[in-house]
Length: 243
Image (cartoon, rainbow, N blue to C red; front, side, top):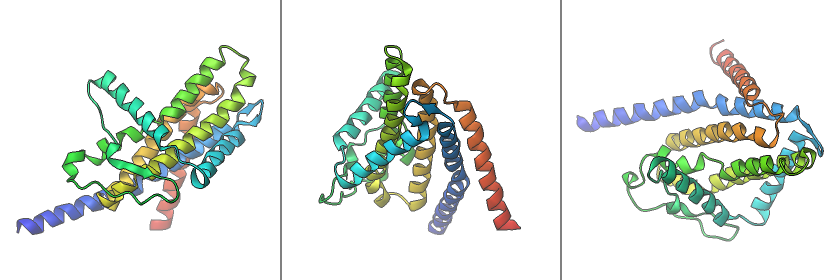
């Protein structure tokens, strides 16, 4: 009887996670739309800010797929996150060394999932916490802010926009590579929920820092436009499902 009850509870839990994934999905899509619209409204010395961000994103994506994947640099960013966590909270939030081997270049062997129970690595959301902070995007925006205090801003805005695209692509693609072994240890709905939350929080945190590099970027307006876009997705989905 206990076994049946446990299976029912587990099934309900998995169904609830899938429902949450479906409900949350429009939020990062809408937020991304709002952020893109803000970039499109900004003109810098090198042209439209969105074109430069997009070019930087594609440039790194091409290098990542065809040439080289800087795993060591990604690990260094996670070390910075852990160091800050120790300083701010008095303890290390999480370590991702158990996924070492993820994100190998072409010709590398497929990484194997760690052989241990789930409790040894904590909850999925705790294990995913180092991926939430786009460390290099935050650093790029901070460096651009400092550079604008030394030289004229028109010399800073264009390279800053390109760096925003490069560091965003770096964080997302390296995170996707690094999290591949997790798929073997967690249910698909748990993995999708964690990935969705990581993507959403990364957007929220990264976009909050963009105005350091591009003062014309309005985080508040990006949130408003993103929420409006999310509502349109919800309304369209509701009409398709129930009308």
